[in-house]
Image (cartoon, one colour):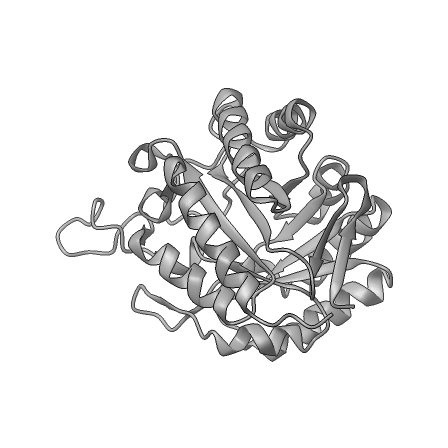
Length: 290
């Protein structure tokens, strides 16, 4: 199944479909900001005739430091996401970290995301697949930083064993070999598409420098937070779409340097239209067989 569909929003993703845009905030900060970012990105995508899904996390559970900002938590976070959904009539994507969160999140989020570090956690995969299937949503599976593209087959099989009709996407976000860096192999996009699901490129997290934020390095020791290469987001995004990716995953903020999480990888909200217009043009030049 190389296509998935959110019938409520008349959105399809995969072979032969328009470029899918999953974009928003790295993590929820407050409701007003979420509403602002969603409104802007929805308008940009509408102007470009691109399907749009609002993205934001309610909890960043895998921070480098215990003091790093994590988000408002499950209950308040779902309330904010519900407000965004109601105000702007857009589908929502957010991530979960524990099996117990799956059902509550799937009732709000049209797309439930499995974080890269957790995709081999069997109980989490099963819970997410069952919850998504019961609510007619999608499961977005981030390829782990330590996995080869073709090894994603095992995760897909697990999810299908739990819920045979579950609709899934895979998401590329680079591989880590240590030394505070990520490397993205664009050939992996085609390898993941061979597994029969649409593939999304997370260009924001692919430019991270784990544990290497120069702003928090002390005495040449490891940083207490993740660094990033903001200028590289558009480079990887364009390369991925030219390589055949079915969609793009991006994080924006009105003032990127003031973002409470992963600021060095975040793009300015004002730059969204130019980048997405460019990506749409590239996508339209690349063959996408249905």
